[in-house]
Length: 217
Image 1 (cartoon, rainbow, N blue to C red):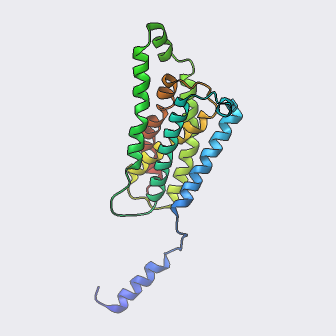
Image 2 (cartoon, one colour):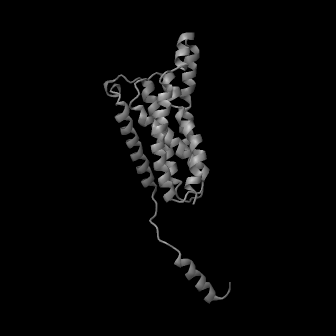
Image 3 (spheres, rainbow, N blue to C red):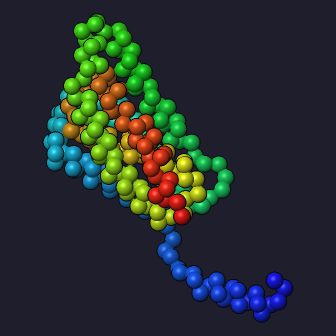
């Protein structure tokens, strides 16, 4: 199209369809996901009551290590997710992958402890009566976090949809488990290392499938 008049008409026609939008800022996504985590924690406390042992010193070192690693993974995934809501080039941060690898030490420690336990204790550890409750409650809390993440991503323009799906699941699984964990009084490594970690990969796998179609633009 070499005719300046026709070029100007085309540009004018395209400009007529343009609608100004407010720029999305990564910190908004971080704030929204943090608020969703707080809402999930308050809902869990309302349903199951806050575990007072956190404040009275009853919580074991395993409790603090597990929840500290969940917080680290949740924070790393949230920051990476919020940054990915905008088109960008160049290397992407791999902090979530490292944080997830660190969290993976806990199931290994739990399996080692169960393997070294006597037959009766090992069976009781694997047949944990609270396992399903913790797993399902953590995943339910994670749904609240995932909804906040999806709402934010839909306002942006993410290009790496598969990666954003993984990050949404990692953030939702870790922060949802962290939120529910304020109510769980079981603080042994066998329980925490299995049933407070398993929600993370399950949420990541589910979000990898569910989230990309929801945030495609």
